[in-house]
Every structure is written in C-alpha cells, then in structure tokens.
Image (cartoon, rainbow, N blue to C red; front, side, top):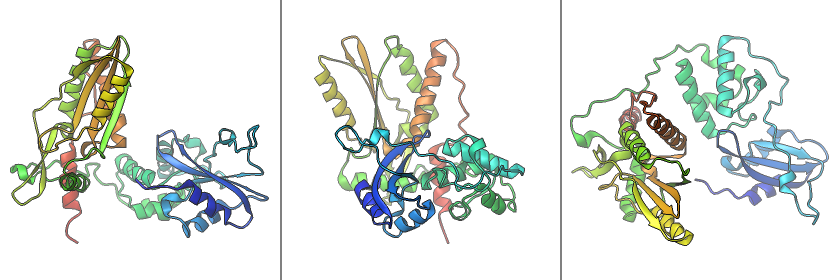
Length: 372
C-alpha cells in the first residue's frame, strides 16, 4: 500500500561514495511477494550491510532494497540505452561461509526459512541473514506463523529482527517451551451483535460508511474458461466453497451502539450467465463488475459472473477486501480447483478441516489486543 519511487532510491544509491550508476527494479519471488533489487556500478564491491544502513538513514524502510548487485558496467541495447532485461537476476544466498545447521531446532528452522523464502534448505547456512536471503517484513510475519504452527513456539517480530540467522534465532528459542498449536479457539456468541469485526475489517467498514460506498477495495479476478468446463459443476463448486468460508457470505451490520458486527447469511451467490456481442462489450461488462460498489450491510462481499462471447466463456470474480486479501487468493483458487475436479468425477472433495472461521480470529484478536 506504500508508494515507492524507484528514482528516489536510485538517487540515494548514487549519493553513496564510489557508486557511479544505479538502477532499482521491483521483482517477484517464487512465493509471489515483491522485492526491490538495487543494481550499481562502482570500481569495488560495496558491503551490502553498509548500503542498507546508509539508505535506511535517507529512505523509509520499505524503500530499502532487499538485495544489491554489483556490476562493472550496465548492459546496453544497440541504441545505447540501459538493457533492463540483460540485468542479472539477484542471487539470494548468504554472504557468510556456509555452515550447516547441526541441532534439531536449527535444522527445523532452516527448513522453515527455506519454505518461507522459496529457497532449497541446502542453501541456507547457520549464519545466513534472513533478510539478506530475500526476506522482508511481510515474510517475517509468515516466518513467525510457520514457526508457531510447526514447532509450537511463540516468536515475536522483535526476535526475528534482532536475531536474523538460524543460529541466532535458535539460541533465543531453545529456552522456550512449546505451546499448544491452538492459539485461537472458537468462541460461542449468543448475541449476534457480539460478533464484532476484526480491526482490519473495522477500518474498511468505517471507510465504506464514511465514503458512502466505494470500489477502491475490490479484489477482481478474471479467467477465460476451458471449452470443456462444466458450468453446472462449477456452480456447485462455488456453493461448497462458500459453505466452507463463512466470511464470503457474511454481511456487516451496525449495532444500537454504532459498532459494526458480522452476520453469516444463508445467501449463496448465483453464477449468472450473460451473452455479449463483442470484445468491447465484454470489456465493458468486466469493467462494470470490477467497479461495482458492494452494499456490505445488504449483500455478501462476493460477486460471480460468466460472460459468453461467441463460444468462449469468461469467469469474473470480484471480492471485497473486507473478506479477502492477496494470501486468500491461492487458498480460494486452490480449493475451488480441488472441489471442481472431485465433483467432475463424482467424488467428494478432500479438503483441510475448518476448525476456525475468520470471525473466530476477529473475536480472538479483539480480546488479545485489549487491556494493558
């Protein structure tokens, strides 16, 4: 959500003594998370830690590159312009001598590092810095979650930033006792108005009320369907998916005290089919869907449409951010695919059990972040 000016980062790099040229690119790792790469030309290689410290004093944390690449000269096109495609891919390996993890905890942490960073565990050494391997603040949160799920250890954000290596983090965690993996437990609510929103939902709900409705927080997805797609089975797949995830069929109501609360409805979205005459009509229909304004107090935060142009079908999925985010996408599409493939051959889909719903997290969060 932050605006990043690549030119500003490049100018900051150029102000470092000895750097003659610089260019910064935004790339995407195997996990789908974006990161910044700082390419620079200088006579000698600059210590990446020194560069990070230098830039941190001049730029916001989110504008400091995750990795730096030293070049003796930039690749140029025939016209003498920078050839961005010819810039080498950054190598996310530790800059320390490789030392293999030895203890059980160190090996477990190395595996989790690899899973979060999208790197083979063999490339992660005992003294390799999580952030020098390509990690960032978002991935640090994911690391904390994986450690809790896999090892039952409660890690704080401060621990990861202070102890960035497998060795350092293992040293801090070795004295901790494992906790139950059930950090969040469902709470029975007898009064519907007690089913409060999470803080993230509450922010969006406030904005929606303040602006009188907005499409700024819509998350759109459009897919061209294979010719053999069974639309009836696809409809049944969405029905099962919505049955699993209460948040996708919840409305946001206002209590007598003016507080927002969420109510799960029995509404299941219709998979409407509309014929369009031309590609321009298709674009117009998709644009209308993407720009739709949800009335969160009256309709569920999900809209599904299929448009038919000639013999080709296009599926439009629009979900409001109050029920969905970037990490939800892979879960949503993965489960939809699993359900569809199972129903297509007459089998019951096998999916992870749903011990918790998002509303359980919302109540846990409000209780956890209360008092002192």
